[in-house]
Length: 120
Image (cartoon, rainbow, N blue to C red; front, side):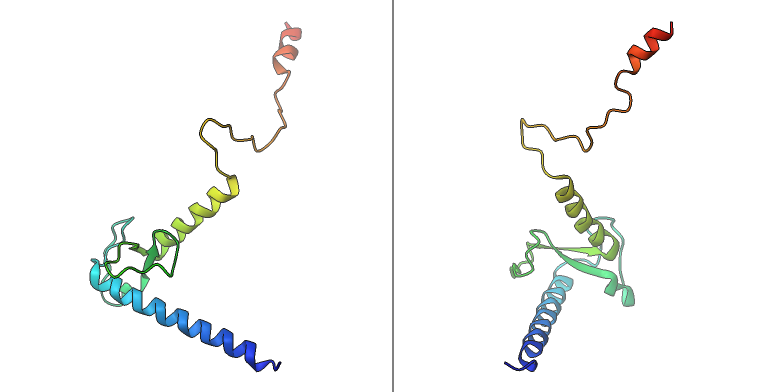
């Protein structure tokens, strides 16, 4: 198998993704006002490029014609949205009725009350 084949597949996948993104972005910009759904900032002219399409369910292939899976977010709010998910995954989820394990088992003040009582 030649080296050109994998490079060709990757290039085609990138072109397809860019085309798909361009298509749903254009549709979202026609459907919604050019306002960030989080911070409420308005965008006009060249600044519209700072407005991004966020997929509410995080599935970039879920692009219903009515735009129900999209919201327009500015670059900063979009970054924040995805960062929050990463932080939540990092900390893990607490199940209802369960307790989250403490991040550390070290107790720097354990036994301090006993030490202070001995000082009296």
